[in-house]
Image (cartoon, rainbow, N blue to C red):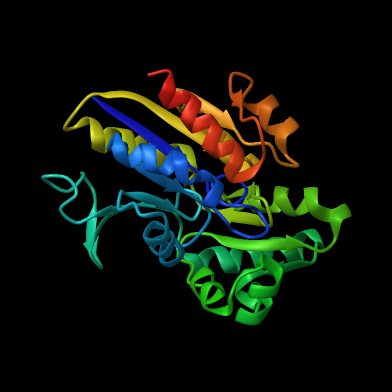
Length: 267
């Protein structure tokens, strides 16, 4: 039977400021020993997640851009998941709205609400690097967006009006650790459910463990079997949204590491 570990990256497995994951190396090694898939479920782009999978040493499916798409490496399963399209070495289930449509909708919602925003597509690579604490090469990957537009709210008193205008357009908004996001009908939970269905075609799933630190993780933490909240500035709101969740003993990769090791020790 499968056990799956599904995790957010920034502020959870990765340090929010430095992106260091070395404190989590013992738990990552234990997952590899037990052949437990590590599913990255992040607001990061496909290009970014490809890089992080290499850095972490895992080659399992992943979920990009807040549930915008689920990427299964070709040949990972005996046959492609239903409704998957094959492209670029992946069998992809696309759930999100086209990127340009989101950019246009955000611009319209900002004008309608009178809320000034700073959208990701307006930022130069060096600006993304500075805002996110990334090398310029990594910032270039972060701008390769396909299903989700990130943005900053510049007129705080108009934020509620902006989010309402986004909703009136039939779209969703989510709040991550650094940015707001405008999305189509996708979310991290829907993507995890499709992931569950894809794996369960071949073996029963014993449990899905989920780890996250931000409010945009709440939907998928609410539907996994073992939700774990990593402490962050959003911890109180996230625990209210997922009251059954366990609380990791520390922020970032150190807390992630101990929570995963404790969980595996109890098996």
